Image 1 (cartoon, helix red, strand yellow):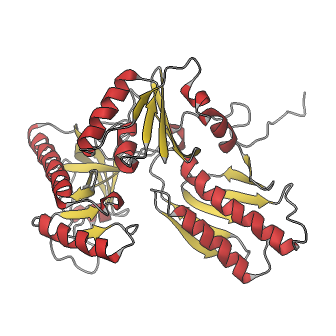
Image 2: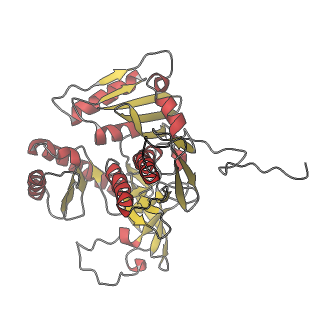
Image 3: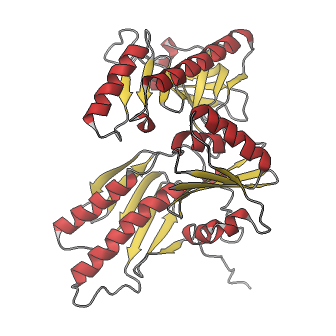
Length: 416
């Protein structure tokens, strides 16, 4: 069972996703500063840089958006040479273009945008210019995969593309077809606005943070949403009645005197899980450090000494196994992205190293964000990557230290 706990305070909305009572996702959104991810804009090309094979597009934000050549090319629609054409052959300054935000602005960098458009629905993702049908790899039964692939091929038109989502595994044609028609209508309205509005203009904004998560992960019959806002409860109920017809939405309004996060144990979990040192169930611990280039995670045995009669190898492997499970959860919860290096405790047996890596891979499959385990380095470190789509500052729960600026140490002048 999953619980979605939503806390509204002033201009900030925070949401924690709990699985069996344990926090696995946390996100926050300032209600007046909603993110751009997934939004469509009519933009104007400002600069074309052939040396970078990229262009900068004015979408009406503080920083111009970045459009890479691969996000302009549509090789399935027209024959493309083996060598990529120069972006100057595809775009010119002053040209209007419809773009979708692929990655939020980060620091001094503007948003990354694409012309490979996608509109997510409850049962599928609609791509107006893609020309293929794909089925979620998380749908394991071959019978379901074959049925959904055939259904997608029947429903799509011309160059449309469809990705059938995991939640569609046992869904019937009618619901999937209705979802597709809704998304087609959204795309029609986007194109209609693009024809009538000047550049730059916002053409379409995705649902709010809460609505997106509910759309993507809510399972009728078992999951529940708990919020401290009656107005939000009404909105969520209406959304669930729309996307899950025939099911009674489980939506509660919390009216207690203490914070909803405190009442459901979320605050205590976040205090522990966002710390630099996080303890493991057996007494070991992990330390998470961030640099500009990558994230480094160090595993230590700590207080864990193993069971009676356990060898050192068994104790170390057990600690590493616990760490693998916890690291996957914390990467998801803290939205750790980019390059990640894990320094597990040294293991002598190759089979134990394989088991630890396999456990981490299995746990990462629970994550909605793509992550890949690359393998062990010659120094015995495990390399992995996880897609990063938003800046860490979009998690207002975490604030940089004004004294050490994230180093964990404060400089004291020898002159004083």
